[in-house]
Amino acid sequence: MATTQKLRPAVKFGPGYFIKEQMEYRSWTQDELAEVMGMTSKHVNAILKDKQTITLDTAKVLAEVFDTSPQYWINLDSNYRLWLNDIPSEKEKQAELKANIYERMPVRDMIAKNWIPAFADVHELCENILEFWNCKKLDFEQWDKQITPLLARKSESFNQYKASYTYTWYHKAMMVASTYTVPAFDKKGLTALYDDLHNYTIQENGINQFLEKLNQLGVIFFVLPHLQKTYLDGAAFYYENSPVIVYTGRYKRIDNFWFTIAHEIAHILYHLDEKNTFFLDNFREEEVNDLETEANQRAAEKLKYQEIIAYLQTKLKYLSTNDIESCAQHLAIHPALIIGKLAFDKTISYANQRLYNEEVLELIDAKYLVNNG
Image 1 (cartoon, rainbow, N blue to C red):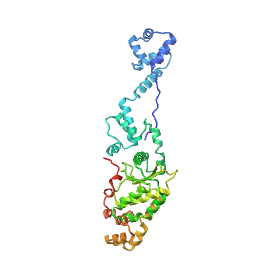
Image 2: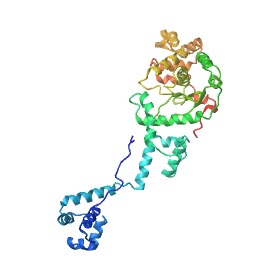
Image 3: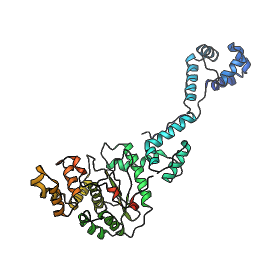
Image 4: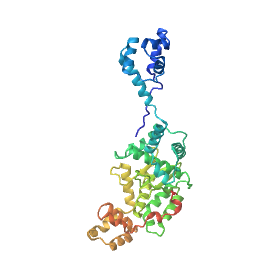
């Protein structure tokens, strides 16, 4: 991703400028120079205005007249012609501007999600982007500095493009969070709710009951689909004084929803601080840090993963749906969580994840879903 600006001299003088210097030194007129060089005054005028390329023959004549080398005049003219051709056309400027924007954000996906309007030309695109970012000018160098914390906290595979797209998603999430109003955050209440999370997984309409309770405790929640190349499952951060949990619905499964919720609550209760102001999570990342490992462990504890394995240990080779339902009833958890755990451990095939897994976005109240068109 290019972040450095191309530098070029503001003005590059052609050979005509230096010929005029020599003429002034000798007090020659254009006609006198033409007579000395054996050329027409019109031809000399074109050379003085740099409209006429310096040929090898002309360079030799100039060298004799002004006591220089022919190469001197050839170099002056070549460098000047290169400088002229280096001035980008309007079309080239627009292409470069669009490239800088497209490098940093998935424009087509943002349009598809109604995050920005469609555009007719690059000027309209810039206006849409400025409005999205709530800024007055496009400063790509400054913009790129904003993604440095993301790069520092992710694995090497998390390159600058992914970081830039993820930062765009995070900005949109902050915008959405600003539209919600919740009471003051009750951390003690959230801790108690966290301990009781598994019971909500088996209640009728338990998802929305849990989300409503989150809101009552001062936690903002909403569903915001991930952008292409970001591969996000969820996020946790603060908007002003309110903690925020975002679910992307990347896999749209009940077990994925509850694990994401449990993981992000762990970040809110134990990790969000002045140093760690946000967590943007991809649970398929091979490399995780200590905080992510702890959040995974706490989520596994609340979803009773160890108890699942202990209960089914002797039945794993010949596991049946009756065993799954019996375990779910015994532990008071949704059977989809059992399937999800066993599939993640590769104890059973991932194909079994369809069992007990309704599309979770159809179970979440519409008020939590960000309208993407």
